[in-house]
Image (tube, rainbow, N blue to C red; front, side, top):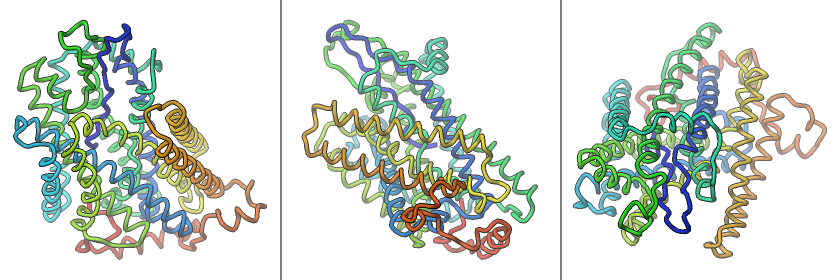
Amino acid sequence: MRYSHVRLDCRGRGDQGSIPVGCTELLWLLLSATILGLVMQRLSARLGVVTGLHLAEMCYRQYPKIPRLLLWIMVEIAIIGSDMQEVIGTATALLLLSNKVIPLWAGVLITVIDTFTFLALDKYGLRKLEFFFGFLITIMAVTFGYEYVVAAPDQGQVMKGMFFPWCENCDSTALLQAVGIIGAVIMPHNLYLHSALVKSRDVDRAKSDKVKEANMYFFIEASIALFISFIINVFVVAVFAHGLSGRTNQDVKNDDLVNVDIYNGGVFLGCAFGTAAMYIWAVGILAAGQSSTMTGTYSGQFVMEGFLNLQWSRWKRVLFTRTIAITPTFFIAYYSEIEKLTGMNDILNAVMSLQLPFALIPTIAFTSSPQIMGEFKNGFFTTIVSIALSALVIAINIYFVVHTVFTDNTLTWLPLLGIALMGLFNLLFCVYLVIHMSISIGLTTFNNNQFISKYMSPLVDSNFIAGNHYASFTSTCDGHNDGDDGDHIAKA
């Protein structure tokens, strides 16, 4: 659960009588992304339960140095992008709650302080931190659920948008939203985080039935969490679909077009349903921002420890990520209008969607490898489904980049060149990861190619030969020291 709950912008358009894309028309994509997220979270949890190592630690053992560092950079980009969204959300919530007494730029600076709130709770133990996290999720569910009940959207339209995969009159804006939905729901760094969090539970990995039982319970836990996240997202989308979708300038006396972001959404709720609705919305956004801070901090710590074998205390990790996130956000908040700042969310979601293959492919590769997972490797059906869904995500990303390069007339040649080069790099790196995954799964097609065998084959680790891994993993877990902040075993 995180701040950037999916927002499908409803745009009132009076020019040329055009009809705006109804917000609920993309709910089916939200549902599909949630299902894909559940599939991948199940795999990442299985990796952590079976091996005793999280995804970043496994990447450290299975990839050569250069690809490993590139993977780390990609995941860090996603973490920083998520943290920027948390900064934007918290600053906007403070602006609404203070009735604009706290300007956006001040709210951005305040987020430096709030990052240490839950770090203080961490000292009181795992259960206290989990309780606080559950409290934040409850606030989000109650506040956004309140808005849903008050707005009373058409349930038929909600169900239609959820189960009929169609989007009439979709344009480039809808494409950006579609890519953003995938990035908002399936956070790449959350797969790294989830594989680490399961290690906080004691599992007797020497007993197959205990491992199976742990896998089942973690799957149930992930299902409940993603179901709650999906319902909250539906609440938000449906409220603004009901209030703003299909409205044109003929419905109001103001001819200005308004993009519904988290700020204007709060203003709309206040105007339509009373001031209390606006404040309740702001409290929900504030709670979502704090929960996002927690997940981002732990993700960053596990990723840095795993990929670089570098151990930092959490407060250093928080400062590292937040400093990078705050710098551009502060200048945009100080020198630009609020629409520029809150409008960054769709772009940041799209960026995270572009980083998604760098979490999906390694997850599939490791969990499908008999050398790593032994009897718990993915079955044929699971492997095919996860590969097909990941291929779909990559195809959507490729189409998004190509579409942006050839249709966006607002960009000059320099940023277009940068986008094209970055897209080409992403594609080539994905090809490398796919070849590596194919070898891990057991395909022999590339065995006769000397170049691939030398530079793309998984690294051989004697600890991951089926039959030897349980003893190795048990010794790894036995070496855990709960007092070490930089420890590889998850404390939360």
